[in-house]
Length: 286
Image 1: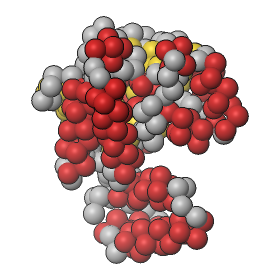
Image 2: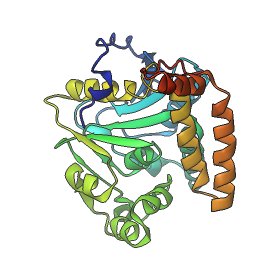
Image 3: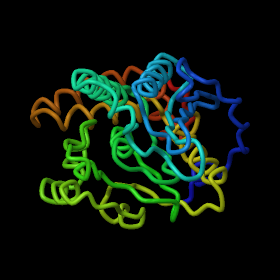
Image 4: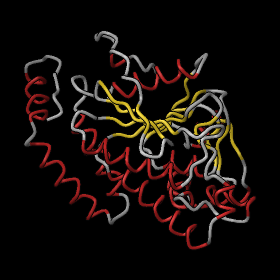
């Protein structure tokens, strides 16, 4: 799809401000125009440590509490890697007790990402393997740069399993047997194959990582006000992410409560009124 489609009648937005390093300097944060960009920064492969996960957690909470942020984009620094997963040298040095706490915090961080009522997009430029793919699976949508790398969960080659949600989230996308086969084999997939499997949602052609990120950010803005009712987008996410984990009856109850909340919003009134008046709506995110 054309990432500029929803912006065809709007002027090109201003670029994002310069990114600011978070507490541990393992991720950066910048926001503007309804979108915040969180970039994982740990060269050469953006492998994540406890420090990086703390920075990601900090970024998620910052975006959640920022009423100006409507869509979150997560990317990796550089052309070659979104994220190569956990820093293996770090895991080699720490105790089993630390590893358990490390995995628990990573689980909590990605759950916080899923529970945040704002759309989250993973921008996959370069390889996205192991824990890197697990981070991406915790996002709502995954957009990859064609030909830039491979993805997969090869933890079995280290004698362990994908321990940052991979066994659960991949199975929910692929189904049990295909997920087991993918993880037990440790196979890596190019992004074209990942698109066919449903691991990736979109493939973009781009001459450079900068061009790719421009396209992803433009796509992210298509979910923002005034063109889109961002409050409704966020509650659609909540209904799906939480509803699929409970019974149908409970999921329908959640859907009704979220709908009731939206019916009281200014955007719902604007959307219904603009439809009756046969004009384009102008949403405010309220």
